[in-house]
Length: 426
Image 1 (cartoon, rainbow, N blue to C red):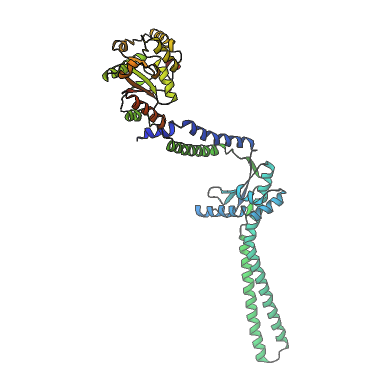
Image 2: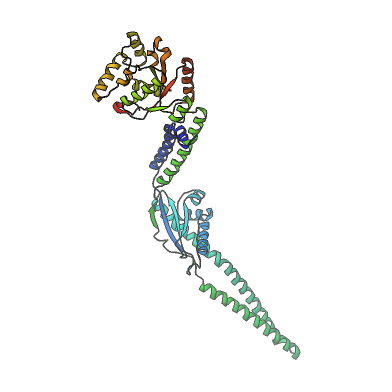
């Protein structure tokens, strides 16, 4: 089976179902988007460090750290309390907070979205302040503990030095006094070393760059662009996948023909043309093929209901049963509307279009439907199958049963197109 035949069976034959599967999610997404209020985004920038990052990896690390802190539910809950807002901290942290670095600069944008523009601005400023405070506390907390420990050691060393100096005053022995002087000198050196360490830490703290919120007083608030295009694309892809899946399932359960050529191979008959051809040319081609097989009465049949309608329209343009007895015409009227008027209508169209359909009459071939076949035509009848090539296999099997019962040869196949002159299905 070729790719074209697969396309005919799965896509073209079930195009309505696929279109419906695509249309339903698109309409649903459109309805949901139109009913939702617009989203607003509050933007506040945080300077994490005064020196620019040395690499892209370091810049990504800075933004990742800010994002991790900004999406912490505890910090979000504190920011909501400061902004005087009632929101679910878990939902806000998970769906409404984002952080993005600005190029290679040590500046990170914190974005908070909300249905209210004022709430988005207040919450973004409060959250950025909480993130900056946490980052500053994270670096100054250990420093303060080290300073406090050094202060405690300096106080203990000074107390020990003072105690030794008091002992020196009360000591009279020379050796004891020399020993105390040595201990006082060692205690003084220890005090000086501890004070030097403390001063060095204080100097480094003075040179440290704290995390600063740049525009917390007036955060930038912008309307979030609609997500309809992105969701529409996803809905389109989802609809296509579902539609194709349903089409494949239906084709598996109720297989169809894979096109006119597949039908021709199945019936072992040639494709003589399509309903878009001029009636004269199509009638001549069918007539010549019929005479090659010794057929004098061409019975036009369709595979399914649509093909039957197309067969009726085609039969109205062919050289109908001229010279047929009245009972034959009456029988034909039961199958094709306007049975008695069909010949007159066909003649009028032929005269109007200037067509010559005399070859069929010259070779003694007439076209009829199944109800117009006479007893005299039984041994000289053949079948012309009219089909678009997308009928179900079960309908083709029913047609094959009829052909086996009648034992009539298949003269050929005429393909129906989507449109034709005069409004007749093609």
